[in-house]
Image (cartoon, rainbow, N blue to C red; front, side, top):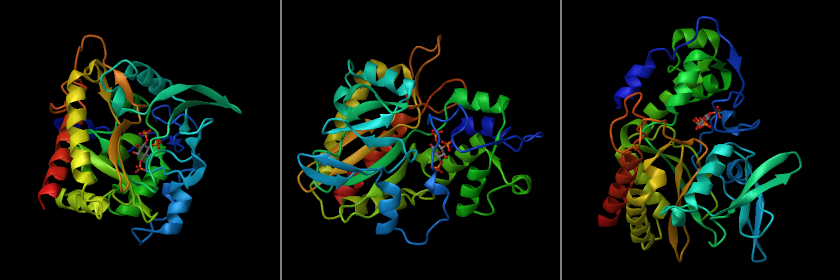
Length: 344
Ligand code: I3P
C-alpha cells in the first residue's frame, strides 16, 4: 500500500469535540447539491436484482432516434443526472472544476476519450453541464464503471478535513453494513466516522489502494445491474467480474484492449494529464453486440497541480505532497487483466 496512507491514517480518528455532518453537505465532496443517497439502504443479499436496478440505476428514460431506453448510472451521487435538451445528450449537475476540465480537454489529445461537452444550461434553479450521452449509440449496452487511482481523496481535502473534523453517521452506517467490526470502539460509541477515515477504509477494502482502480458498478445486457463490488479486493475476483462482464461478447475484449492502448498513448501526449491531479475519475466501458468503447468520465475532483510542481508521472508511489494519484498504475493493471482474459 502507498506510504501516503500511513501518514494520513494518524489523525483520521474520532475528533475530541465531535461535530456531525450530513451526506454530501461538506464542501469536500465533489457533489454540489443535496443527495438522496440510496446506498445507505440496508445491504441486500442478492448480487443481481432487476427491481433494485430500476430503483438505483435508472435516473431517467432517455430517447434516442425515436427509441426509448433506461439511462444507466453506475456510480456517483443519485440525482445528479437528467435527460439532455437535445437528443444524444445528458445533463450533469454543474461543478465548476469539472467544467474547467472539459474546457481544457477540448484542445487536448484526450479529446476523443472524453464525452463531448457542449455548454452550461439552466433548468429551474440549477445549472447543468450538457454532455454527450455515451450510451446513445449502443443497443441494450453492457456498462462497467471503474474508478481509477490509488486514492479517491484529494490531498487538499485531507488537509481541510484535518482542520475541520466532522463525523458522518451515514458513512458509519455504510461501514457497519459491510463490516460491523470495522469501526473502532470510539466510532461505535459516537455512531460516526470522519469522511477521510471512511474513504481510506473504502480504498483499502477494495482494489483501489493495491491495484490503482476499483469496480464501481456493472450493468449487463439482461438489464441487471450491481454495485456490490465494495469488497472485491483480489486480482482473481476482479478478473471474475470482468469475465462475467464480457461473457458472450468475445470480440469486445480486443476492442477494449485496443482502446486502452490508444488511451495510454494519448495520456502520454496529454498536457492536461501531466499537469492535473486526477482523483475520483472513472473509465466507462460500454459494449453491445457490434462495438465496444471506453471513455474517461467524472472530473469533479481533477485539479491543476499547485505552483512549484510542474508535472505528475501518475505512476509513482503516493507520498503526501507529491500529489501522485496512481492513474497509470490502475490503467496498466486493467490492461493486464484484459490481456489475461484474452489468453483464456
Ligand atoms: C462514497 C464514495 C464517493 C464519495 C462519497 C462517498 O462512498 O466514496 O466517492 O464522494 O462521499 O459516500 P461509497 O462509494 O461507499 O458510497 P466524493 O468522491 O464526491 O467525495 P459523500 O457522501 O461525501 O458525497
